[in-house]
Image 1 (cartoon, rainbow, N blue to C red):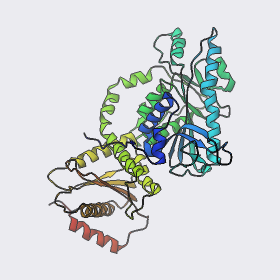
Image 2: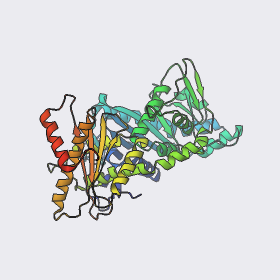
Image 3: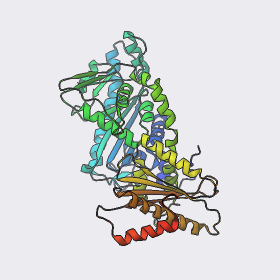
Image 4: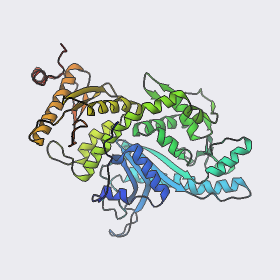
Length: 471
């Protein structure tokens, strides 16, 4: 299996590229940005963004908003990263609470303030400390976005492991989740996290043991947001409490309850007045299971879908991507890539495998395939691979490929009238030296398309020998 190259930023020139080169005040922040970019992809990830708060008369640096900002449609992820040394004390509760206040409570308060700013001033967030370059993609108005707050707190794992091992060996060292703990009550519960913000505003706390696990398993925006939303839905219930020996075990419980019909994972719904207590080690048991191993192997083709999005993003940032009208609007091109990135990891398995088959097409033949979306049966994809051999002019080849891609997409609408949105992807097979990619998105309104359009599409399909009955 061959991957398209990822974006590279050597010789960076655009503000976005420069921001990625200069991101991270320390190794921990740089590592978080790397994980975020891998999971959420470059186009929607912004490390170390700033507000213009505190600047006077256009001078001085702005104030850092958060360590990683992910903006994906109406969902916003705000990360705060702190690596704080755990200072020993004769009383473990004292040592714990001092670390908690520096690593978790402080992050939670900063995230709350950052969310407030983002909702009030969505147009005053910048890529650079000098606040000269706003976010390339505009934020929706404050009441239109769903904000998820994530505090990454590192430095206490070894101490947590030692503390819990007093009652039995084998602790992972991750922080317990306990929804009965609020605010200052954390002082009495070493290595347990509940509600750092007493208003019951959910702050997801990940540590050095769980950061890689969660972002490694939920390595798409769709999967990560679905998990956070499900956790928030359950944990904010006032009639049920949860005691979980670590975020990784909650994740295992979530993944274990996958519904093949809806293709979604859900946390079981406990009865009113219940107390949910999970056992430690569920994550280790899940990871060692055969179904998990099979799924890990099955995921491999899915990353071709990520590669394709990153490949196009690299051209957008380098200024070598163009719309059909010659424009270079990142906002317009982002809509297509965001639709592709809405697909879950499971959905990307069959999408990535289809890309691989199309890129391996042989015998100088055109290859076409139509695919269903994992988001909705009203969305579909068409993929076309067309060799450029026999063409004297590459522009003529591209024009023909774009025409055939559009024709095939419209033909799909004739065969699947319920589809309202079609995304097309066209490229050369692997054997071709030059590699370009064409994208299109067609929205069909709900009214019936007129007969003249239908007849025109049928004529073009016959001429191009597409969607014709096999004889």
